[in-house]
Image 1 (cartoon, helix red, strand yellow):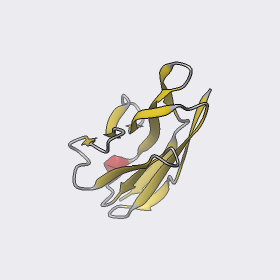
Image 2: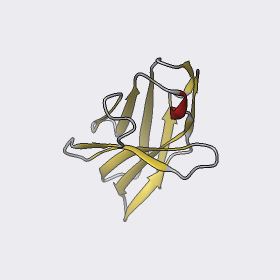
Image 3: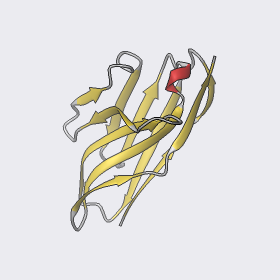
Image 4: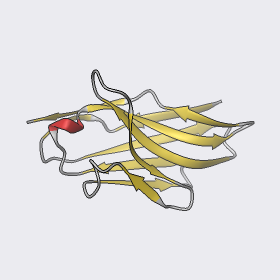
Length: 118
């Protein structure tokens, strides 16, 4: 079994910064893509950013230039540095990882709330 645990969410004023972390643990042989998604009230879950094992990244247009995704493969951890936060960034942020355990599967964290006040 694989567990993903997010941390770092909270309440911040517009223009502020937060750093999210997601730790993967369990019976992990390797981790392929890791990523962050978010879901605002009444909206579908959307991709924020992803990073593959080799370090290549992909961002949603809405966060390019403001958010940075990174990972520490030695710790099975992925980070999301969020700068210049806007009220429209308010959402529950979920960590996702494609993991090789006894099978290859996609796993999700429980989510962490990010609230940006205007």
